[in-house]
Amino acid sequence: MLKRHILVVIAVVALGVAACSSGDDSAAEDDAPSDSNGGFMVQDGDLVEVHYDGTLDDSSTFDSSRERGEPFSFTVGTGQVIPGFDDAVRGLAVGESRTVRILPVDAYGEWSEELVYEVPYGSSQDDVAVGDQVYLNDGRPAVVLEVKEGTVVLDTNHELAGEALTFEIEVLAITRPE
Image 1 (cartoon, one colour):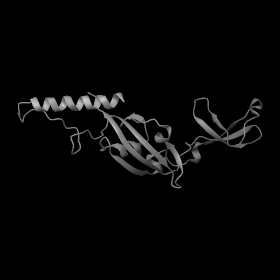
Image 2 (tube, one colour; image 1 turned 90 degrees about the vertical axis):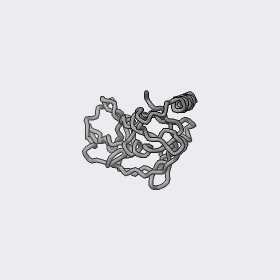
Image 3 (cartoon, helix red, strand yellow; image 1 turned 120 degrees about the vertical axis):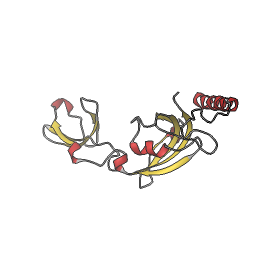
Image 4 (cartoon, one colour; image 1 turned 45 degrees about the horizontal axis):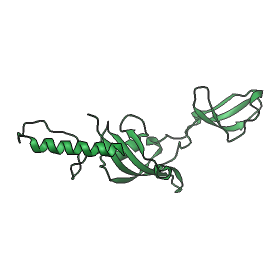
């Protein structure tokens, strides 16, 4: 809620400054994109707050900020989200929505055989089973594909690798750095 109030205060201050200007056309203009109502349009560096619903091609939901009841915030263009999600919010204004289908190349990549490893398996790990999610020493998650005598086969691809993702995104707030 605080972010929305900050946005309103910034807009009111900007209107006050514009009303008090001398009308000198040589003054520097803000080159930031804005919508037809004078509001910000999302650009790189903006902190945005959005609601989204993410579905797969079979219409199953894989994630939803709406279902969690908590908006998602991130800074556009900083690598905090998949590239296709960054691209989808650019140019939107507060209150605008967009539905976008993101191909694997702009999401979590294609599934790769190179990210499947066979690793040694100790007797102290007797409870490991096919389908278990485990974590490598470097913290990366992996799924157990096969348990063999003395080794396990692990898939370290992201669980959504190879999937096209459809997002319905609504911009709730934009905070522009000063």
